[in-house]
Length: 369
Image 1 (tube, rainbow, N blue to C red):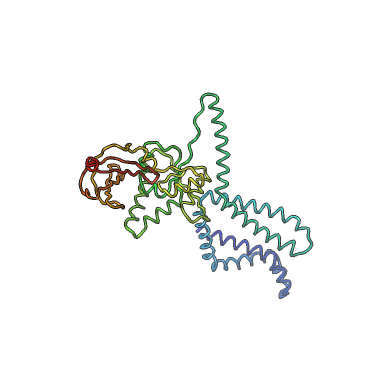
Image 2: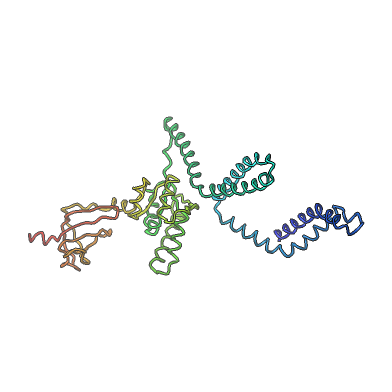
């Protein structure tokens, strides 16, 4: 194994260096022989190299295992996180170097030797943490600058008469809209412009649902994964996986809102509560239910429909029926018609982000009045 050979070579070089520097002094201090060649630095270098070479056979497996553990940890870190963490580390070390320069001129040994080491480690650690944890803000700054340049370029082209339109904002999918499945059909019709962003933490939540012991949840999670697979492989849209995470935010919905602010994107959902929170925080949101309601056939008060009353409603004497598209119709005084197909008269229509509800009353009752 190449890594083992490298570790052995490191021990040999280290042993040779230590032997070259210290073994002659030890021989002279002990004064147990008059042979000059024993006190030679080159002899000490050979002895030190041989000693640490044999010592490495006891330690090499542990060292290689430790290095493998570090390697696996680094490989799992997203490239963006590793890059910004490294940039932060370098900046921290540079600041530490500049701060340590005046300390070198202080004659107190503790101040001139120990404190610089402590400052270097501390600022290097803080630099890495700042770069790693604030990576999304740094990416946002870079994107803002790029968008400003693109905007100026597009404006200049438009003034010249041959410019393109501004680049559409990225659309961030939440868990509910993926499980719902209609987003795939919308993407196929090309009504949704821009890049589709699928956050890694949403994928994690989908996988958790797909691994649930509850059959219903497990089926919903697997359906969501199938929808994502279809969007990514079969549909003519650009899909990107956002590898970052907001570790200080536990809720997935809050992470989505934070991500939308960071990348200046739009949240796509059919969750009524998430829709309201996005509105309160000024985050653009597209609600699939709003789109579905907008393309449903228009039903106006005063129209007549043939419906089948399926079950009783929440209020007294109410019956519930449904249109072919799933819209619920509340039939006043319709409890006595459960299981029957009757003609109803539309009295009012209530439309919200949660869906559309139609209120009606039996036509027979209207005629009787």
